[in-house]
Image (cartoon, rainbow, N blue to C red; front, side):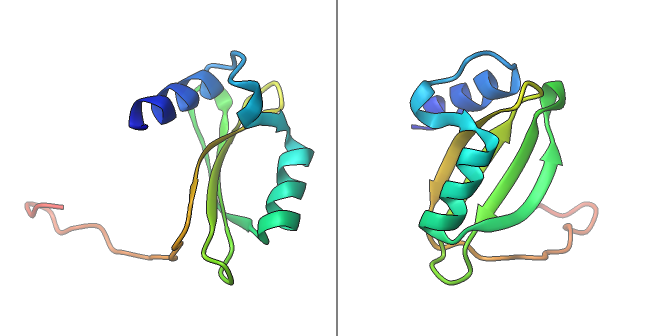
Length: 98
């Protein structure tokens, strides 16, 4: 399973065509996450090749989804699950194990 997630992420961030079942236009993906799962964006970052990586989650249901949107506008689901929690942990002190 980890290998397939890594391959999907690599495919999405490289801007090549990923598996059609996991990708759709951005507005379609966002509507589904909001309407079906009640998820909203929790975090965002910039990945390789200007791909936008976002985490969506619902505080009510605990579901979460990670998506990647390529520079070309294709949005792909990379992972999803349950039991989402928001954390704000401080980094470990220098010289200690993480």
